[in-house]
Image (cartoon, rainbow, N blue to C red; front, side):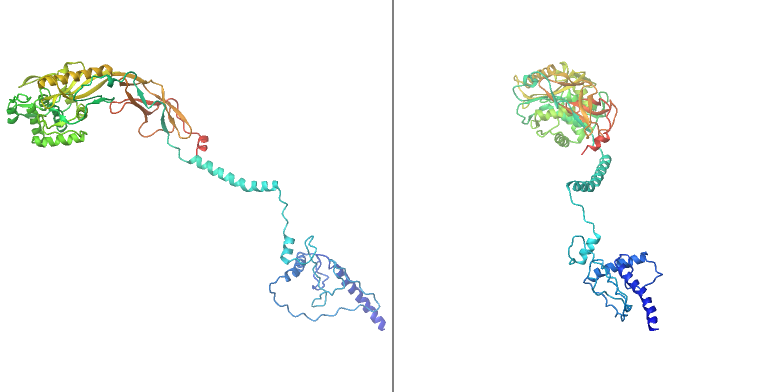
Length: 559
């Protein structure tokens, strides 16, 4: 009976050992159940939880090697001795170690006495030893070694990095170039900056007086020259030109017909009219004359008494009027001129030819003044017919202006003449001072008149005109600032007055308001000018072809 009792017991234990042996043999499988888990025949062998537990059991020995502190493990329960093999049965062969470890080594047991599966040692390929740190093992398990660097791989890598950057910069550049403001167009000239009239220079051939001072110019064209030292000298009755200028400025009358207010002759003017020592106009106290008639009595017979009368009428006293004369001279730039009276009878009234030319240029702008000084004679009711002392007025083209003569001043003349060239009337102005001839004052005046007439005729003979630019000739271009250019042509013949040897400036200027970015052919964009001053000759400058706005390509290539 004991044997029969033991027999079944041994027989029953054999399957258990066999199962244990089989379990030990299956410990080498990566997806095997942990050794410390209780055997449960009903639990699935291959689940996600099961595999996660296997992975954690494989990594647990690696993490345990880290130096970090770990909480103390609870005391293990008493191990249950493993069931001894049945007497007479052969011992089970030791389980083969999957990593080649010693099969006789003692295996750890769990709290329930079952064996724990020992994690295999995972080493990187070719390590050859187990001394690697855990971090290196983790790196070997998780990192993929980079490919071996080559020239082509480096080129491809740089191309992938820089291509987006370059594309972005190109897009930004295109946008900026497309929206940036266009530069302002400019007008460029294609003609010479000046034009020289051919021939021997006229100023070198003119008959300039050998004594005194002299100067001449063509208004709006240029100066013909200055001769003699410009030192202040007595100017005699040339003073009356400033007197007439101030009276007309303070009491203007228009044109050649308006007469202005009535001015009475006072006692002083009437008494001075009988003087034999100076030039006067014969008037009587109580007479009344218009402002125009008073100017005729002042400038035609050169009445000194009328000059002082007009000074008192305008400013109250002659002294107050002289103060006006001095201030006006400074305004006109007559810096070497001194006025001490309204008539010029005082030898302390001095000036230069250049200063007197500046006054002539200004006063000849007044039409009323021009209409008076051009008179060779005039008839005034209550006075009779009076004659101008300027005998040159009978010469062709001579239109004034005023004579002067005295012992200190000699003979003097401020003169004006016309010459029509190129369809336009040109004004010629000149002054001669300190001319002497014969034995009397009248002889000196006649000398001044003769020498002035020689200058007038010389200028009239040399004054000419030239077509500097013909209509349709290219004179410049409009530059759009982006490399585009549109030709500009003269809208009419540019004909300028001048004389041999004269070099006159030629300029091309844009119209006020600036140039357009686009316009049709024939649009005026500027002015072509020859000469200077208000009398300069001007013609319009027109587009030869359509002016187009800059293209998109031009915008992109503009930096």
